[in-house]
Amino acid sequence: MFGFADIAIVKYTHPVEETQTVMTYVIAEPCINTKDTACVDACPVDCIHPKKDDPKYATETLLYIDPVECIDCGACVPVCPVSAIFALDDLPEKWNEFTAKNAAYFGR
Image (tube, rainbow, N blue to C red; front, side):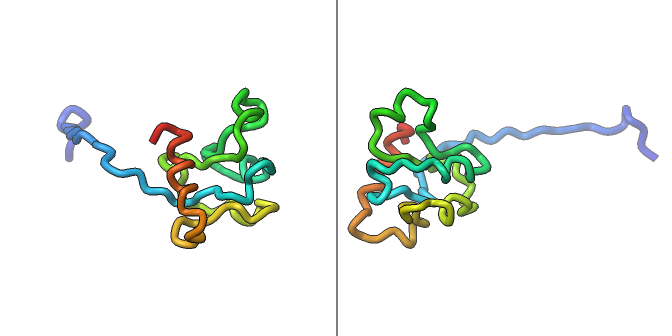
């Protein structure tokens, strides 16, 4: 049998290049001037910002979902009291601009 000294561990590293940001969920127009944070509390990965304790909360008109951090779980959708959160495929065409707005908030 193999002993501890007989096992070799080889690690390969591959550079990862982000070539395109893909949104999974988008917060749209109904959130403007509402900013209910039930979605923030429901999110298991902390990808919705700004939070109430963030200085930007006072100046931003809506909340945003980080397209890189979002794990596509959908936990935020049913808790939104104004139905402002949509899966990208379900986003009404009239609110397509909010996809870019959500990504831009995070510099993506």
